[in-house]
Length: 386
Image 1 (spheres, one colour):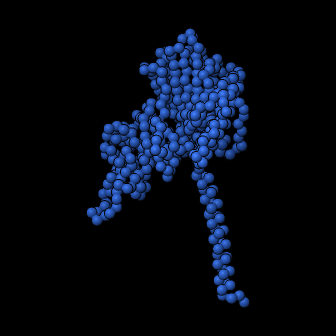
Image 2: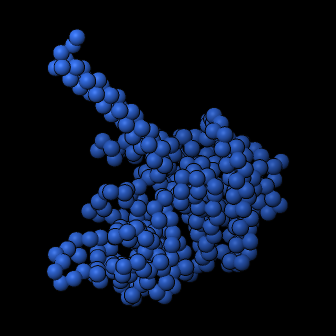
Image 3: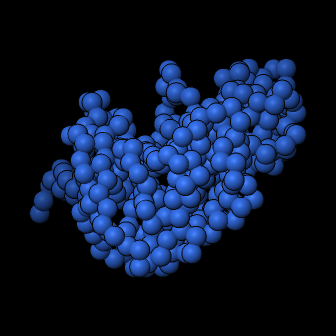
């Protein structure tokens, strides 16, 4: 018969093994949870949250970026601000509260926060005997800037501190003092990665955007374009635009000079295009912003000094383009529900490959502190048919 000490030892051994097994299981569950929680977003960048015109007076506006709920508004002097839409007391959305000059007040217990830095300035329920230091309490707060009719928010990673220096929010490049400008947007039911590689895809035009005013399927021909690396992105070097696109040919006839197009893509989500012919120019920026891991939004802004192009006419055709892209992404989302195996080809899908490589390199650089490695060694020519 085993001695009591031996029984005690064996029981402890069994318990230790059970605990170790549970710890291993907990670690595996934690790893799986971490993998599921990684939505593939790029943090520490500016993202457009809402149109400037949407924030009026003392109203509070809700938005969501990178699955972070935000409340936005304007202080009494007109400055936009962005805070996490959650009171640090009980978690109720601050957007249900009210804005009083430069202070956001929670609707639940009246806690008040400075809209410009998120610092708590008052807790009405505190008595004279309470020693709680109100000024040490902060609601989540994000840097905010206005550019080109949008309110941009700098989204630093949850739980991280803001960097010592933050670059200015992106601005649209213009080439004269007087110009027309317009903005369009649409939502795509897809992950940010699918939205972005769709944005830069050079081969879908004749199929998705075929129309009498742009191009026809029968106009497909081989193209060769030069690409070059730029910081955090790549550039389709200045070139003559497609001969099968009517608007470019019209511009050439009007000015009597060649049309030159330059297209850039820069992390995390920005595609810019500049078209110039003599003194006439057209400049656009498209961003694909992650709202949730299954939803993103295209924000498109364009400016031009083309005297023959009214804003109303451009918006008609611009909406057609965006609707065509949106319908295509809706159809793609239907197929992606079943997790099919996907493939990328050369050369038409090389920009997509560069995007994924740039994204991975940036994440690795931030993790290790090593310099970011660009996937392009230098200029390269790509060929495809479209």
